[in-house]
Amino acid sequence: MTLIRNPFDAGGYSLAEMTQAINILPNLYTRLGQIGLFRFEGVSQRSVIIEQYEGVLSLLPSVPLGAPATVGTREGRSMRSFALPWIPHDDVILPGDIQGMPALGVSDAADPLVEVMNRKLMLMRRKHAQTREYMEMNALRGIVKDGAGTTLYNYFTEFGLAQITVDFLLGTAGTNVQGKVREVLRAIEDNLLGEAMTSVHALVSREFFDKLIAHPKTEEAYKFYAATGAQPLREDVRRNFPFAGILFEEYAGTVTLSTKAAERLVPANEGIAFPMGTMDTFATYGGPANLLETANTIGLPLYARQHLDEKGRWIDLMTEASILPVNKRPRLAIRILSSN
Image (tube, rainbow, N blue to C red; front, side, top):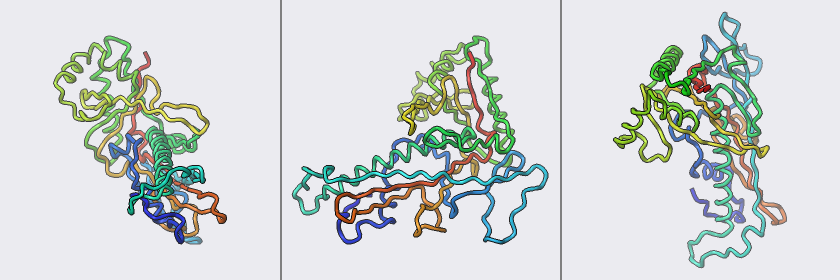
């Protein structure tokens, strides 16, 4: 969506208009979003209560103040309340940003101020998208981190669950790689716990992928697969290799944290295998903006608004998100690695 009205006009852009615009802008840094793993679900509160029962995490409904609380003391159950991380990000449009940028002279040409605003909104959108990808990738492994790399919640620790790890030992020529794949598949099947799936996907590091396709037990299979050209994601630049029931995909995503440190989304020699086509396992919950007009409304993925300085010296652009990604069956995401 392109903003076409001058922000200096009466009232500028409303919260609804700005929010709609920034949520429609292209999202260029979300591999998990591209494969549709985490669905977004808006909630009306700034926190969620999650209950764990036999390895499954589920949200509990909110109740009016003073009403009886839900009970989580039954054997095998535990409850925790998690605040939705608040992620504000602001920018500003200064006179220097539009100085020397006249409109094209056509009656319907975009105002240079609007062009600058669109460009800045696009950049802000990408930063939020990168942050969400980082949070969802970590949540897939059962951990919630913020943009500084700080661990906010560890679902395994919070609910006393143990993550499943399979060492492929790809540095050993005699390793039965098909046996390792079956171990992963069976671990996922055993932990579906009433869930359904269509296939199993694995995002792996470059090092893991290179060892996998060069292993004596898989090398010929990869050569045949690459030679046929029958790649299911042929238009994708990333390399992938379906083997024995898992689609292995090289994932080289790297983010720059707010501390300026770089962090790989998949550690070296590791990967994460997870089911595709689930109904209610992976979700990102979003709360309302920290504004009076959005209180008690259903949250959106991202909010944006603008404010003109009363003396006309600048325009503040303000964005925010309150999102919490959840893997409701943490043991479904299998950590895979090669220790040699």
